[in-house]
Length: 356
Image (cartoon, rainbow, N blue to C red; front, side, top):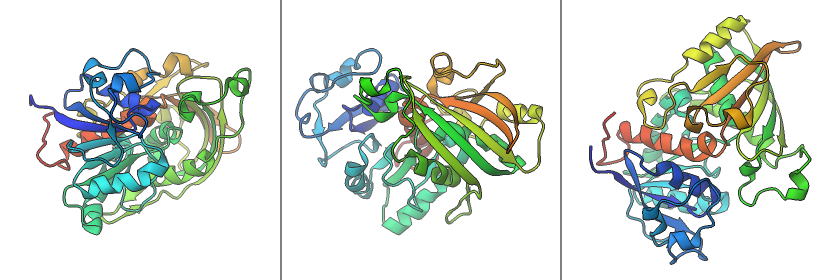
């Protein structure tokens, strides 16, 4: 396949929009052809409108694009959304209704019953909801698929290989990077030399998103995983990657070796392991007693892997460990790109059939 599929980025000047553009540079299937942002950026050259905050510089071909306004006409069949929830509520279904396939990082439609909340290695079968969605909403070729809150992502990835042991209860405490708050994020006088023991909204999102993502698609709907969960979310002075401590009750009481083997052998169902953005090892176990650490482990699998470590007995629930992932790569733009790759391979983008 020589011809790449043109894609549009909504919210292209924001931090997650920039991460989309960075990750899509030299992508084997997709080419950024349209960038969309708010009224203050529309009509300007992207390189002049953006305050680039991720590593490196904007790709020159994208820097030369003229920013389109929100709500304007788009030609690209595939749209990546890094919009705030308020804007996504209106714009994303309009685009899907017009025939665009929308892979969104926004939270607006994550919990809609006909919208797949995707983590490809974990729940690729949930993509079947698109057929339900298209029929219910009369979308002939359009679609809407979401990825999760960036903090629950490494939790779900670490728990998916353990479902066979019967996950019944969870206790989660997050240590979330400042980039999770967007740019400019948390005020320096609040976060430096400090930990903030509250992240707005996340404690409610994490359990409900986990139950949906780890649930089963029965051909018509998602049957949520039946698990009791308690969550505490904190913000720490780390730039990128969220670290979460998990205590978990497993019904069949596996050995520590069985848990580690389950993590190490986990790959996801075909074709997910063969997608361009999929890491070779989605769950990487580190046996060193002081890992995972954000600075040392966030780029595992090019930022697309979850890293687990410090597995040990929990006196209350049975087992406890840490899990970590890069919040703006795997927890945001990277997952949306992988979701789009999966939709393309599964035939949900009309006229585009990439080879893998």
